[in-house]
Image (cartoon, rainbow over all chains, first blue to last red; front, side, top):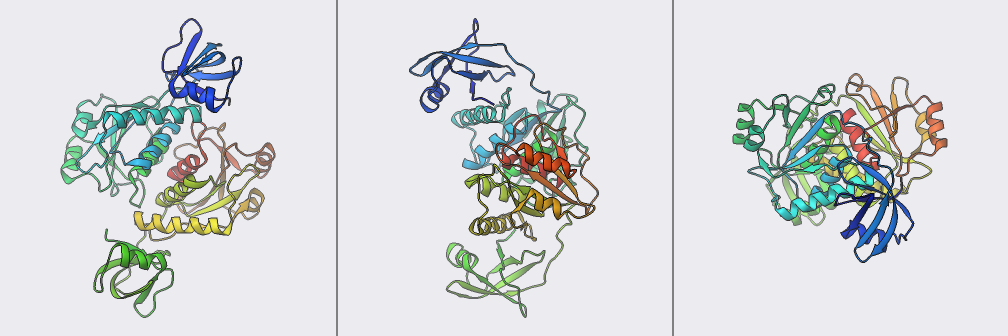
Length: 232
Length: 232
């Protein structure tokens, strides 16, 4: 696949603008020239072949060819709501969930959580999603939701959605448990140290199904990735 | 769970020796003292409560309590044969495969592979397995096999084992495809850039089933982890 670039603004009249990191990467790292052919995508499912029309400081203008929008439909719209780990583990988590086709990542606010989902942190997550999409050929960005608590998530649940919570002691998430195509699934993954008894009580009271992910105590990002590998 | 330490030599007469990194970690990092209680495991499925009996330079002697050997049986004995990625991605791969219960990791020698499975590299992988086992509560080490080619793996296959190869273009590895408990499964994951046409021809000729892992082009470590999450 030829190099793919992300458009942060919508194309207009058959032309589009690359700016910021994308423009710098094209011009300075890859040393593309006017006339070179690349591919661009807007993160909503559409991708175009494109020809570099002009290169200025921090801004590249491209002329677009015929759009392609044949993103294969995901089996399930999966939201992973996870108490974010810190640093490198957070970065890994975003990359892997994006590759595996997760629809949405929601930073889960928990009692024992270690990483504060600040606006800067959320912006960093979004940047990670774009990088991973460019790398794996995904055209639709994984959405990064606003930080939510268990109560927020349970309160906003849609009828017909299936909510599960990863619990090291629970019966395994069975092969074949993946629901019918198109159904929305929300999977909750707690922080290192787990949910508190009060949090588990709230989850149980809301009828959230506990599912296990094997006999070992998984790290936060491993549990989230294992859920995505089985359900996304 | 209290701190767990790995025994590189077998216990004798109710006593065991911690050496090397394990002894240094106990004495210098955690500053344990004689009389402290820890847990030790030998990597073959047995774990003991233990009391620190003496601490010398680079050697700690512990007295063992009653062994526990109740490792939950894995559903499938999974071997992941993977063209190792480099650096951090390799380290991460080992950690995650261990957590997810993979039985054996075999460095796969391929035409386009980037990481040379030297003896030093294999030793580094083994150290990674021990660290991950300590962290996730696993008592039986993930085995690190000798580097093998496709021909080696196919030639050494046992009757009744199921061999699959991850192929981005293939039909998805279905939920419910996990075979009956106890069966040996070998999953092959190629290098960045994929297997060559010649390698795929050899795999096809040997009747190895191609399985897909979703619509995106997964990184090597992501593909290996996704396989383990579904089959281990």
